[in-house]
Image 1 (cartoon, rainbow, N blue to C red):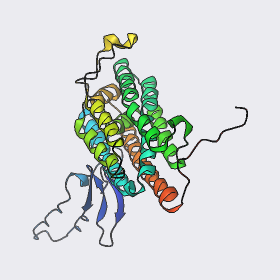
Image 2 (cartoon, helix red, strand yellow):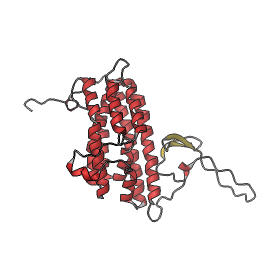
Image 3 (cartoon, one colour):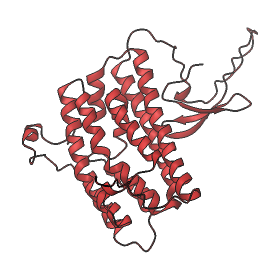
Length: 309
């Protein structure tokens, strides 16, 4: 069988059971029953594999319908969310070092949203992504303050880990290369009004703090409050006043409506691009563990200062 491209296979057991991620959860798919030639035998019951085991042709004819495309992107995005939660939980023992690397990522969100806006095929999507970039710029202020609080230095004096940079660059490349896949990932990083996602990221970040830190929790709470708010109407940006806010804007649906209908190969490519980001999130966590937990990397990591520059 050919599994749905939003199913992220991670292994195959000796009995043929396929393991992987589906809809943001670890799952296992039982092997398909062997065919029988006995016409009188009762058909074997189908294994309880759920929708992840739906077979799809290698190259389905025609185009992918908007509903199928959006559902696929949601499923893949939930997988990214699962990986993000799992990896941030795993690196929490690295404490302030891990939180500083996370802050570098969160402070970098506006840049790739702006890149995605510049590459958007239609004006409504470009406007929405521009507003998202502005929103993320404003919500990045608590992260920048957090970095200064944790390290005693401004963010632009610090050097992220190579694996943190790899994730930042992967998001920037995705923003320029595949708006559909990028939007599926972006909506998992705290878009306006998503209070549930903001609170979950807040919980994960707070777990990295030492118990005696009283200032950092307030900064993280400020970020979550700003993220959950939908009150920003961008009135301070003259060219965007007529565009209004992101209230009631479904970024993913807007992206799907802009890109529909894609060919099957394009659909699979976008699904693969989302999974690549999930893998790079794991690389980010590996870097935190490798450099700080096991490698005794000096912290904070300052940028190299060149004489006369």
